[in-house]
Length: 118
Image (cartoon, rainbow, N blue to C red):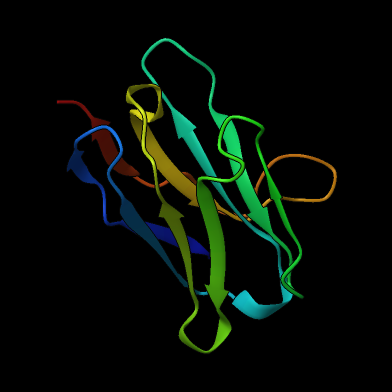
């Protein structure tokens, strides 16, 4: 079964940068789209960015121009470079593999906490 594993979160000041990583096991990573999501307490999980198997990317309006999603299929790893971070980016960030009709292929992992605060 596919199991995504997130890492790289932490505490950063406003305007700072972080790079998140997502590793996947039990999965032919290269043939599927991969997405980053985030969630804050009491809110629904939000789609942040998606990268397709051939590298096509899509971003939520709130992160366009600041976040960059990328993938290394040889390493079964996906990244989210986050620049110009804002306090409203504070959330738990998750990665997963979206199904075309909705839902995800993998279970939700523990995520990685990103806190943007001075």
